[in-house]
Length: 510
Image 1 (cartoon, one colour):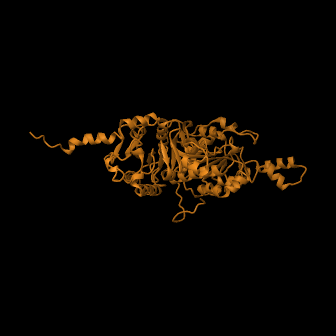
Image 2 (image 1 turned 180 degrees about the vertical axis):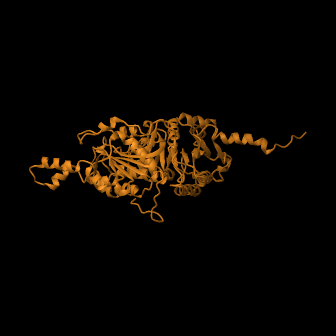
């Protein structure tokens, strides 16, 4: 007797099982042996349990050359779909290194582009998990076209929805430009790397012997190049950090910053701030202590902590709402602004402005870093990026000068002159063209009473009185009241609306 034909519904569970198996047990074991999770394991740890809805699980490549027609694996090397993180929606792309080494084909790219289109349509962030050997060589220019389509989506999504990237394996050649076009990149130490050309090509062209980790590892990109923004110890740490980071961000440029309940009183004062700034202006102090003392629950998510340490950036909450923090760090190069710090700050300020995140700036800056190397490398052009970012920003901007605010750096650091909304100074603030010693040497060149002239200069300009008299700062406040004053201002500025003149786009000094 002939058995009844098998319906598609009967086949479906088996097909789904094949799609979820990736490259098979041996390749999954090899992935684990490298200290790496699989594409699906990463998604499971990143998102809320049971929230992932997969797209295009049965998609296969359409290449018939070089024996590829005999190798077809459902999903084609990338797992895509939507989910929630702490109840908030997110779109996900996770490359599967167990399938064709995670290499990108036309269909692989199309899956990613579909997710990005839906993110822009619905207004929710995109998280990309990169673990790929690069373009699928068998598809030739078709795979390159796929990269081009993704790059264009990255560009269109920029400033519309947050684009977050986890580099959790190889990312080389043209593939690196999708992360570079995204907003924030987290990397994993010892198992992830990014570079345009690998060590073998570098050796053949320049003669340099360099490892993958030295050339493009997580430590390299978070300490030397500034390409990545956080380096984590392993996959689990990276995914945990991304979950925490995600909670600070609005879903899109039309959304307001998220709010979280806090038991930290808005009117809390801290007397330790009254004495944190040394009486000797040549001595340093840790600006991070001020930040953690002022924000909710002492929680500060710092970005790029090991790159351009003279400028601090990161997210915190005040009154339960996300704020972006920018601060000079007196313990590093006396808090001076240099090329790397300026670019680091400018990118952060522009991100916050794009996504309606208020900016709180703490200032202790003696100026821009002098020297031939800085001048030759373009400190004028790069310093202008930070100036431009603050001047362009329309979000609420509140600034506190804790000590030095000298020269052009005073203007750049969210001053009243760049449309800062509320500017405060502590009693220890010094707002001047330059420090007393340098100023007196110029004004009273050759004078035998320079010490006396310095004292006079400090008395006149070494206090916040002059900028307060000119209306350049709103008030001189007791340091202990900083949190209370900032929260009052942020509440008041929540309804701020400021428009820019119509333009196709700006021409910032890139």
